[in-house]
Image 1 (tube, helix red, strand yellow):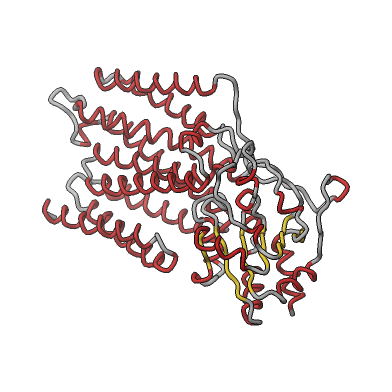
Image 2 (cartoon, helix red, strand yellow):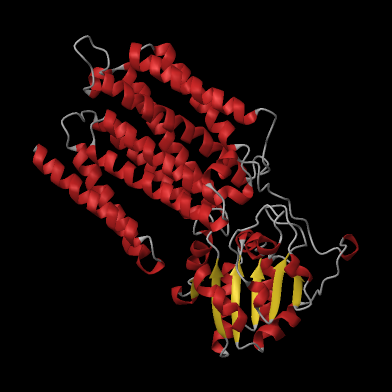
Length: 466
């Protein structure tokens, strides 16, 4: 294949990647966006395999077969509730791939066409390797820690210690210094030192970040993986990898900004960490353990409220995901709509553990896209809503974000559920959310608490609706 044909094919693939991102911006076009992305990746792979520098097809196809088998098996078996940690783990693989390619290119630069007349590395190639390797290393270990937190292998609480930020700063400066020494002198000691520091930094940057900030972190790791791929694309002189990496990196950065804006926090503040530790949720409601009275009800009471409402707005949260209640909830919604009740969903941008987590769960249950509303769209409607049904969402509905300047989430835009005529909250207990805050809506006179697992609660409500 001629160089012009390769460039043309890569251009077509790049356009398809852009169309994929555009398609993924809306639930209605997301399937088409995924299809564009897959076709673009297929074109990029086929064209890359035709390059003269690719010689050993046996190892390549063996890796494709093994990776495809593992990936396909995991994709079929993974529950949607585990999607955030799966995404984090995939980001770690991108970072690891960048590191391994950088090490390989450093070991044998001639094989990558980046050797100078003395057999060493060109200065430009050293800079590219430095950037791709350290971003990839940080992405790798940071994603592993994020995966472990999301999977529950380690505590989701922030891990902080005295002098933590100073240590990170010193390590960052040491990594840059080692990278500069490597770029000047090509020494393997400096290269390995830079990699080791980057791997340690990836861990230290994520351990102080708690559960409340995980949606931002997942999107940031997405950005990191893209920039790592783009950096290695320069090393491999692969324009497609550069373009794809830049698209992923920039879109991840923009998404992180959107997430931070939705939380009314700066990205710098999120990366410093120390906020939003995961709190273990206990069993049922223990009235003697609570200092403030609540109105506790049954599934029959909840069904009565919903059946006699004209309009219902449902606010899904992570409790819905943990209980895997989306399908049972969809049956409740179908029953209500069939009886003439107007039902809509209210989605907060940072609900769940990754961007769009609630949208993904609802889409899996075939909830119609036209009744799923974003926060800015649905907030004006709460004042005209008969019943707001909240399932496991705490921080994103907490009025303290507007009324308490001392509150850690003060200023964060929230869903205005307290403006509804009646509020129905499904929760296992009165435990606090990821931000470690109690929620005043639980104690309002117009609120009824249904203390149960979200799936069991939805199934019981459905039975009472019959």
